[in-house]
Image 1 (tube, rainbow, N blue to C red):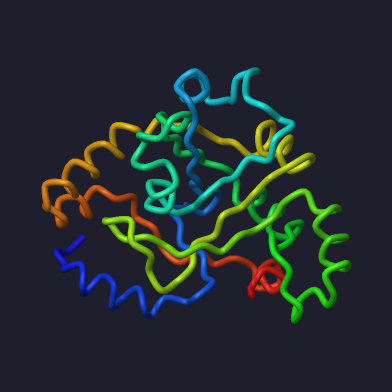
Image 2 (image 1 turned 90 degrees about the vertical axis):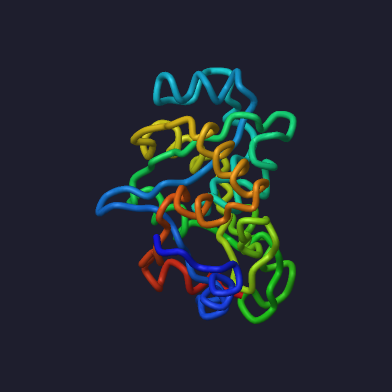
Length: 210
């Protein structure tokens, strides 16, 4: 990655689609991030599967943006989020989740009245939030980052069918954070996972853009 000032990066960010997805991905997989306490995160990275102590009853949120994950877990310093995982899942599974997702908040233009939205929310095994993307200082950027919540059938499919591999990227988070603290932003930026605009089926996203 070439050397760019924070101002240049933010100017580029202003031209990003407001509700586009950026991610690290291949022809068959997409990488999402989660953070857990070490007892879960370390076991998951070691075996490539979530351990039995990982709850299938709670909604689990996956995030394609590395820096948004850093914002959420405080670079792996928040209690219960000390182990940061990069979870590689199938693009087919990700697309299924988008198709079966509902926005986590009511948008009259999309849902009509609030009662209709609540009915859709109850029957959807996934939900979407669009939160401000973050820069290296974890400040909000003008465009939004996708957060995808999985529950019920989606959680089971995620754990049992979609996961291709799980890696512990906590050391990477710490290295990037150390460079940011030292003011060496170009070095920090050079370590970031390469995230590109993700070409999701427009039909899968139409009901999720607000």
